[in-house]
Amino acid sequence: MVERFSRQVVLPQVGEDGQRKLASAHVLVAGCGALGSHTAEALLRAGIGRLTLVDRDVLELHNVHRVSLMVLEDVGQPKAERCAAALQRIDPGADISAYVVHMGPAEAEEWVPAADVVVDGLDNLETRYMLNDACVKHRVPWTYTAVLGTHGMNMPVRPREGPCLRCLFPEPPPAGALPTCASAGILGPVPMALAALQAAAAIRLILDPAGSSTEDLVHLDLWGRHADHAPVPRSADCPTCGRGEYPYLELSSRTTVLCGDAVQVLPRRPLELDLEEVGRRLARLGSVHRKGSVLAVDLPEASFLVFADGRALVKGTHDPRRAQSLYDQYVAR
Ligand SMILES: [Zn+2]
Image (cartoon, rainbow, N blue to C red):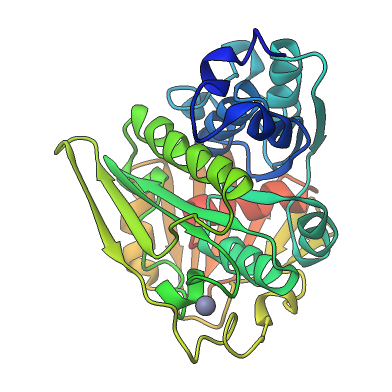
């Protein structure tokens, strides 16, 4: 171990004691797409001894330009499993677990308390708010990271010592209000840069928990070659870290498997979709027919009906995780 990590151990911030701490640390990687896979690889190579990988989805062709560890022949296979297999080849002695599930409240309540740090590889804000609830409730530090287009941002969270996600953004934006990687695109190296920032923050939370500066949000614009950071005060009346309310751990499942080879996906909160706008957005990707208050959408990878109340019926699948993933990608986050 001394030789393998010698260039890291020599750092005054790490040292032999620090390297031993990393070897005994357990990091939960929530999501194994671009952000999660790059973060997991950086952490494993730095000597983190135990990783738990969670991702509900399979690798798609349009993921390959930005992920780590996975190659073209992995398309169609679960991302968590392919990441775990590749990581295990890098370090056969590491303790790596992979779960191909949607991380809901039950999973978060079980896995978050078992981790020393949680890192963000998620693709939707709702699950991030749920994760923030779980981490603050169980006092497990985590790092919030988001990427889109040519830029991204990162903020480490030390529960009840520094600001949490809801101190930064008290409420999630309305469903469908934010662009997604499917609609706005993402430059391949962006998640790699933000994952490096996130992995370094996670290592510091393990080695120097009290000293970790968490009161700022770092923003990187890779195209404009610009970095800045904004101070984030801890909010005294934050519902999560101030009042100890965890509503996102209470939400029940939004998906129902229907007979007739379809899955219904409910919106994350009551909403009225602008079907004209959704139709225009999806018409660039496939065929769209408006039938009253229903939009019938046929894309190469899925067919679904979208209702004005935000509900969708995803056809041709019995898999609620896949249906929810398609909903998040194409209907609303
Ligand atoms: Zn807070």
